[in-house]
Every structure is written in structure tokens, then in C-alpha cells.
Length: 246
Ligand SMILES: NC(=O)c1ccc[n+]([C@@H]2O[C@H](COP(=O)([O-])OP(=O)(O)OC[C@H]3O[C@@H](n4cnc5c(N)ncnc54)[C@H](OP(=O)(O)O)[C@@H]3O)[C@@H](O)[C@H]2O)c1
Image 1 (cartoon, rainbow, N blue to C red):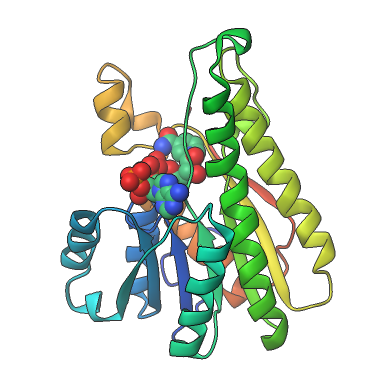
Image 2 (cartoon, rainbow, N blue to C red):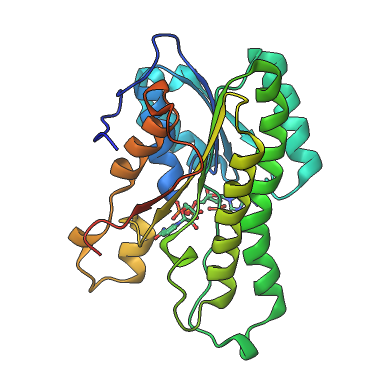
């Protein structure tokens, strides 16, 4: 893959992009990367202060940002949000799903089944609901790009993280099969697989780690923007590792 820059391969007209979890650790960087190249971003959020902070960080391009408060594991709510977005903008060029959750450090037989269900909801059902809603819109357009954020754990199944690893592996399988469904339609679907990301939350949780080894949210965001661009037209059904030096 060509090394991407934030604007690499972007078409001249602004895109309409839905960034699910668009105010989170990675999602914020993804939202800002699209805004930087003058795209219109609909960011789903849960906390008003996170949306306000994103708007402030976006500066002048914040006028191209809108927030949508929605639980992306709720299919009916996602469909409603999608209908409203398409009514406003007339199209959806790209969907990036950065919603996810993490649980580890507990053996499977000791795991609360509620945690197992939560991992499936955040890491698998989110992408399922969002992709189904987006694909219906994109099929009418005959064009579109979807990027779902999985994790290195989809392929690397360490002890104590069975529910997380299984939910991420299933998310990769779901997108891979969807990519096969969509061959020849003009819609591309890819997964990205970060290892531990250099987010504020991870720095707090692992203060003694070597942060330099972790992939930066901005670097991952640049690749995601590239995958959504016309320059990446040949990349479909990929699962792209983003491990930095870790
Ligand atoms: N961080 C890492 O080291 C790492 C490593 C590998 C893969 N990943 C994956 O990368 C993605 C982004 O990770 P991150 O670290 O940026 O996570 P994050 O900071 O927790 O961001 C996720 C965002 O999604 C929101 N969200 C959670 N549940 C939601 C729901 N049901 N509906 C709508 N929004 C919801 C969160 O809101 P709240 O803050 O209110 O919960 C948050 O804003 C995830 O898929 C994650 O699994 C992360």
C-alpha cells in the first residue's frame, strides 16, 4: 500500500462521512483527519463534552462537523440516524466504525457472561448494524467505502481475552464476507487491526509502558482516510495490521 498522507487520494469534492465513536480516542483523530481535508463529518457521540472538545479542536473546519447521539448497537436507532443523515446530505460516501470495547485479564470460566455479551455488542453488533444501514444507502449510489476497526487480537488470541478476541475475530469475518457480498457494486469494505494505540486512556492505564512503540491515533487515522479515498479503489476485503513497533 502506498504510504498515505492525510489528504492522499482524496477526490476534489467533499465527502459525507459517518464516524461512529467519532469523539473517542481513535475516533476523534479520524474525525479530525476527514475535517482537515474539508469533508463533512457526522460523528456519533455519547458525552456532550467530548463533542464540544472535538468541535474546538477542529477549529474553522468544525462547521463541517455534526454530532449524532446514538447507541450504535441499537439497529433501529442506527437506521433512524442513517435516514436522517441521508435526508440532510443526500448521500453517504464513507462509514468508519471506531466503536469498541475491551475486556481482559480474566479466564473464560470466571468471566461474567454480561461481559461476553458486551464485547459482542460493542465489537461485532455495532459494525453489523452500521454496515447494514450504510450499505443500503451506498447500493443506491453505486459507490461507498466502509472501514471497520477491529484489533490485532482478532488474530492474536492471548490468555484472559477470549471474549474480546472472539468478538474482534468475528468482526473481521463479518466484514470479509460483506466484502464478498459487495463485489462489483462499487462499495469497498475493509478492516483495520491496531495493536495498543497511543491514547490518553492507555497511557493512564499503563504508565510504565514504552509509548513510542504504540501506533498513534493520527497515523491510524491517515490510513483510514486513505482506505476511504478513490486512491484505494483496489483495496477491498483487506484486514490491515497497524501494530507500530509493538
Ligand atoms: N485503544 C486501543 O489500544 C485499541 C487497540 C486495538 C483496537 N482498538 C479498537 O479501536 C477502536 C477505538 O478504540 P478507542 O481506544 O478509541 O476506544 P474509545 O476511546 O473507548 O472510543 C470509542 C468511542 O465509542 C463510544 N461508544 C461506546 N459504546 C458505544 C455505543 N454503544 N454507541 C455509540 N458509541 C459508543 C465511546 O463512548 P464512551 O466513551 O462514552 O464509552 C467512545 O467515544 C475500538 O474498536 C477498539 O476496540 C483499540
